[in-house]
Length: 181
Image (cartoon, rainbow, N blue to C red; front, side, top):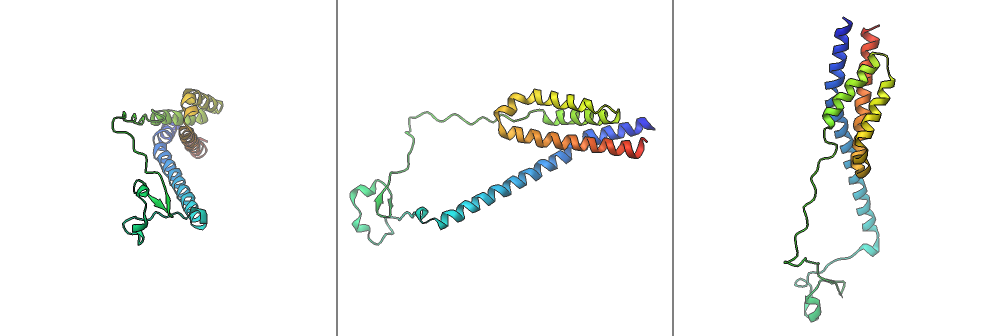
């Protein structure tokens, strides 16, 4: 009967942890989006209150005193009666900018996550919690270069690792306390 509970714990920890981790990623993204929206709203509110930021662009055709325009203002836009530079257009013979890289970050994370959860659960069920340190060390060393380059990857790595480990440890502890003692 013990083997059955160990197998159930491994299956639940290893494979049911993926939806939990995905849900935590979605929650983190929602929180980040709300924070970004709040920052944008705050910046817009500050811009409305700042008199120096009150710059309007008058349409030359709709301006009542369009006859007073100088010949030089036809080349640019008029902003409060002053001449501004036209928007910069790249020359048509200039080479196109290279496309942005679409390389995925933290490739193989789902498989590594399952293995991590299985290892953590097994370490707790066998009474060898020191093995969890080895799992974290191997995972961190394997991802070090990618985490160093990309802050977004580092954040995602931390969120995923903590979620996976907590799920696996909680599952193993629950099975150990409820069914194996």
